[in-house]
View 1 (tube, rainbow, N blue to C red):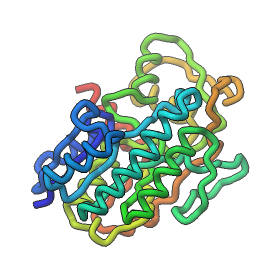
View 2 (view 1 turned 135 degrees about the vertical axis):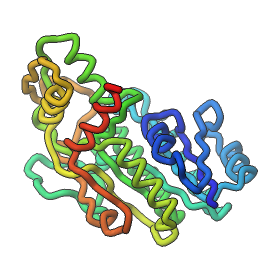
View 3 (view 1 turned 45 degrees about the vertical axis):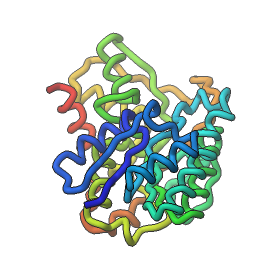
View 4 (view 1 turned 180 degrees about the horizontal axis):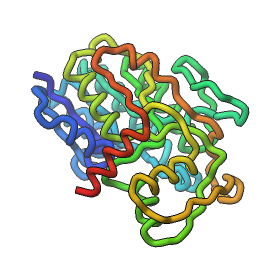
Length: 286
């Protein structure tokens, strides 16, 4: 039996892993920031050593894309420096590290139409993306696994789907950007993939970077329209541009991730993003 630690255990992905790991033959532990601050390297090494973990799934991150522009030091501390210390501690203790990253490490040029592969160079446009890219480099340097995902959401936490459902029940119309293209990804699907990789032992033969998203692609506008339709909300969704939003952090125009590498691993299932959304909305309606 493997002992698995999930950092950021009360975030949307951490909660999804808790949900997906029910019934697993392995032992999963979930640490909140109050229980384990990954920025405290001494505490991290002590915690993973005393508890004799075999695997660490790092879901702890600074994820406020806009906020990172004003809090660059905090973003780099959590997404890069702390991740480097965690990667080195895991290497010293012979613990397999799985680190979660993002499509925002790519620049996403407007004319691009082919999904990014794991081998392509990163070119982040924002502080958030740059801090995550730097964290990735330290994980791979020390033998860990990086799994990039995109547009993550869950039935809990703070995310685009929950925001759209709230606004859709409060307003007659909303405007959503229609010039950014990516792939919505249910944290439940990603969590099941992570649990499958650990429980099957597939992680023993893995290293480097992998992409995991749900299937297909769309714009945020398309995503919002599908949310309203599936939820049965009459709110009208109107198109707007990123420039009209006047956001501080630049976003990639195109950030679809190619998933062929992880799909080649037995037991990994990727479903259309619309199907995964249907599951989340169904859970919210229970």
